[in-house]
Image (tube, rainbow, N blue to C red):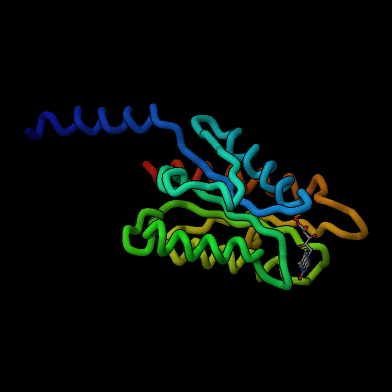
Length: 186
Ligand SMILES: Cc1cc2nc3c(=O)[nH]c(=O)nc-3n(C[C@H](O)[C@H](O)[C@H](O)COP(=O)(O)O)c2cc1C
């Protein structure tokens, strides 16, 4: 029996190696800014070898996709200093209809957050912490960019949109999410 142990370990390691790390980038966006940041984060995650990264609007993501993911990023515009209502509704749906509180199906998955807001100091960090709170409700582990809560963009000055630096930080966060999800999975 003990002689078989190294062989069994090798088999389980190679089974993992064949399976892609799955990242899900879930966002809400009405005028395209948060979607742009979501695309950058998705691009970063997908650039990590062995990763499959999917973009999903909050209203379209399915229970099966959430359960299958190893890493999940959540992104919202700032609405009245907080997340868009669609995120609050989704968090309640995940806890109750999907049963994630009881099943702990999201526990120990890796998460990241991002936000866009029109003005400086007008709710982006609060929104990201609010999104992180959703991840923590389900026992997930948060990864951040170096030195901040998440990736964010200040979008109006006027019509500034999402600039290259903001997209780069989102791409880097995507890389970190995919790499950490791979480590947590193994
Ligand atoms: C109802 C509403 C409330 C908003 N409240 C805020 C706010 O409190 N602070 C802020 O910086 N921007 C606020 N904004 C601006 C959006 O957060 C910003 O334009 C964002 O980039 C839009 O993202 P989207 O293009 O992905 O929809 C608000 C926009 C709307 C429609």
